[in-house]
Image (cartoon, rainbow, N blue to C red; front, side, top):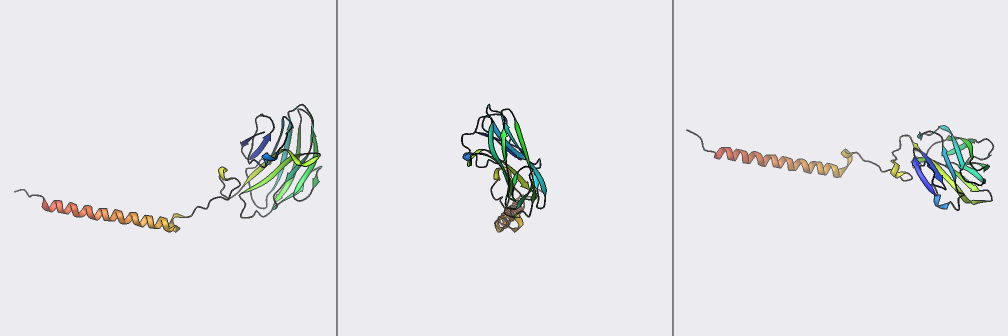
Length: 209
């Protein structure tokens, strides 16, 4: 199993072909993936906001030599609603299709969603695309995640899935204030000592006739 990162799209593949990715999601649960099978999900957008509507496209590709049949599921967070997914078994939280991907072929499915009020605790809007074994939904063949950035939320790439750190203003930080005052006091003391030494040296210098 190989995964890779490109833009905001997770791409998981069973073989080693070139791929793109965002956030690895339960890839460890994938078992005995048919050779050459891969999946990707994207809506072509880098970020989103509360109230936005978008359409995800899921692409399943079979570069192997045998046809693969499975249940393709797009699952969204609790604050997102699936509005339309043609040909699917649809509810508000997911859309599901039965797909067969012939050798050398690609199957695409689309799901239109509405993003409602995004909770303040969220740092990404994560939408899963999973191809399950058609006979056993507990068996994941391949899975991908579109991890959408939320406009106005600080979320560096290395903290995907984690709560972003809060940066406090230096003027409100007591430690910064203490350090600044201490530094100022030291500088003032050095200046005073320097002035005294300079005056004493001038006062003790011999005067010419």
